[in-house]
Image 1 (spheres, rainbow, N blue to C red):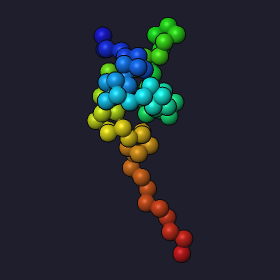
Image 2 (tube, one colour; image 1 turned 60 degrees about the vertical axis):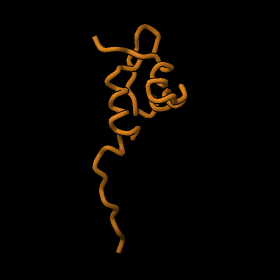
Image 3 (cartoon, rainbow, N blue to C red; image 1 turned 135 degrees about the vertical axis):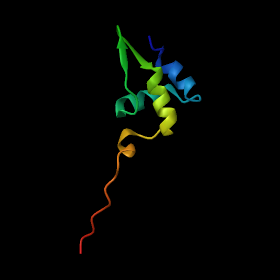
Length: 71
Protein backbone atom coordinates (compact mmCIF):
# COMPACT_ATOMS: atom_id res chain seq x y z
CA UNK A 1 0.00 0.00 0.00
CA UNK A 2 1.21 3.52 -0.84
CA UNK A 3 2.27 5.89 1.96
CA UNK A 4 -0.26 8.63 2.79
CA UNK A 5 0.61 11.99 4.33
CA UNK A 6 -1.47 14.59 6.14
CA UNK A 7 -1.43 18.15 4.82
CA UNK A 8 1.07 19.12 7.52
CA UNK A 9 3.33 16.15 6.74
CA UNK A 10 3.13 16.88 3.01
CA UNK A 11 4.14 20.49 3.66
CA UNK A 12 7.24 19.28 5.53
CA UNK A 13 8.05 16.76 2.79
CA UNK A 14 7.98 19.55 0.21
CA UNK A 15 10.66 21.54 1.96
CA UNK A 16 8.72 23.23 4.72
CA UNK A 17 5.93 24.83 2.71
CA UNK A 18 3.02 26.12 4.74
CA UNK A 19 -0.05 23.95 5.18
CA UNK A 20 -1.98 26.81 3.55
CA UNK A 21 0.05 26.40 0.36
CA UNK A 22 -0.71 22.68 0.30
CA UNK A 23 -4.42 23.38 0.88
CA UNK A 24 -4.38 25.91 -1.98
CA UNK A 25 -2.65 23.41 -4.27
CA UNK A 26 -5.34 20.84 -3.44
CA UNK A 27 -8.04 23.37 -4.35
CA UNK A 28 -6.22 24.36 -7.55
CA UNK A 29 -5.69 20.74 -8.60
CA UNK A 30 -1.89 20.82 -8.33
CA UNK A 31 -2.22 17.96 -5.84
CA UNK A 32 -4.91 15.28 -5.70
CA UNK A 33 -6.42 14.49 -2.31
CA UNK A 34 -7.33 11.09 -0.95
CA UNK A 35 -10.08 11.06 1.67
CA UNK A 36 -9.68 8.61 4.53
CA UNK A 37 -12.77 8.89 6.68
CA UNK A 38 -13.06 12.63 7.19
CA UNK A 39 -9.33 13.33 6.78
CA UNK A 40 -7.64 14.67 3.68
CA UNK A 41 -4.50 12.72 2.89
CA UNK A 42 -2.01 13.02 0.05
CA UNK A 43 -0.40 10.03 -1.63
CA UNK A 44 3.38 9.87 -1.80
CA UNK A 45 3.16 9.60 -5.60
CA UNK A 46 1.39 12.99 -5.69
CA UNK A 47 4.21 14.58 -3.73
CA UNK A 48 6.78 13.04 -6.07
CA UNK A 49 4.92 14.49 -9.09
CA UNK A 50 5.12 17.97 -7.57
CA UNK A 51 8.83 17.53 -6.87
CA UNK A 52 9.49 16.27 -10.42
CA UNK A 53 7.47 19.12 -11.97
CA UNK A 54 9.07 21.75 -9.77
CA UNK A 55 5.70 22.82 -8.33
CA UNK A 56 4.20 23.68 -11.71
CA UNK A 57 0.44 23.58 -12.05
CA UNK A 58 -1.16 20.95 -14.32
CA UNK A 59 -2.15 23.64 -16.84
CA UNK A 60 1.47 24.73 -17.26
CA UNK A 61 2.48 21.14 -18.06
CA UNK A 62 0.28 21.05 -21.15
CA UNK A 63 1.53 22.26 -24.51
CA UNK A 64 0.54 25.87 -24.79
CA UNK A 65 -0.74 27.25 -28.07
CA UNK A 66 1.07 30.20 -29.53
CA UNK A 67 -0.99 33.36 -29.22
CA UNK A 68 -2.89 34.26 -32.35
CA UNK A 69 -2.10 37.64 -33.81
CA UNK A 70 -4.76 39.93 -35.17
CA UNK A 71 -3.64 41.50 -38.45
